[in-house]
Length: 169
Length: 169
Image 1 (cartoon, rainbow over the protein chains, first blue to last red):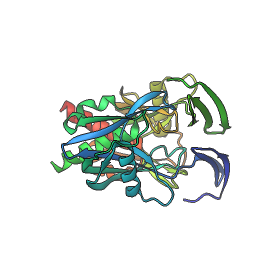
Image 2 (image 1 turned 60 degrees about the vertical axis):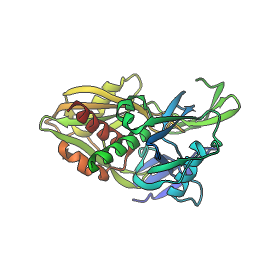
Image 3 (image 1 turned 60 degrees about the horizontal axis):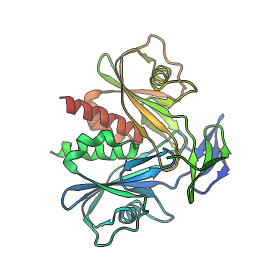
């Protein structure tokens, strides 16, 4: 699938907008470089989440550590950088669990979801925003605490992680 | 949480953009009226999905029936309308399974996820787009076919549906 033509309609700080012509219709699209999210489980079996203020939602949300791909960065490289920046966690065994579009009706964003197991807590505190709170759950608690999650990637990520564990059990 | 001020920065056909001031920083936000998605299972135990071209992804994606809230419409009303429009399915027993933000880093969209069970196939074909293909899966197949899904709400919705069935088993 390829558009006949495309024109930039908005040049913002966080996102740009494009209108593409596809045959007889036009489609307005939010540009996005792609993103990563990580289900990170440490050496003592704890899952690490982050709670942060989300202006668009006007509330604090509990989410998987996640971020946006930087220019020239591969998905796993980006995911390792974001995880360390947000939580101080490093190392571990990584695999990509899935990749999905977050809002394919209007935005280009494709997200790569990783599982990082046996990650290690760093000695130094992460250089996180003061507004980013680290939250740790026992992996056995996840199933009982899903109702605390109001973010699509985090629901999809935690449920895929549980589903994979079930399937392999 | 409330911003100090907000200004419109983009007025598009499909979405608008706002920049909000929050204390010492500004946040650029894609406006969205909210959305619905439906895990619809009919009287013979088949799940209904839709496959449609997604310009932003430049490919056809297999997704839950879904749509955007119209002015003055409640979530369940919207979900029943979208399901009938896209698939011709009506009736059944409905419940809200979850509500989540799809991309809280930059967009206001909050999605209500419904499960509709024992829905009935209408006599008339839906007035769907020619480009919208109806796909039916046995509910028992879902777990083996998740790798065909590249859409976040569909992954979250199907996994929540399976998880709930497991928890109640």
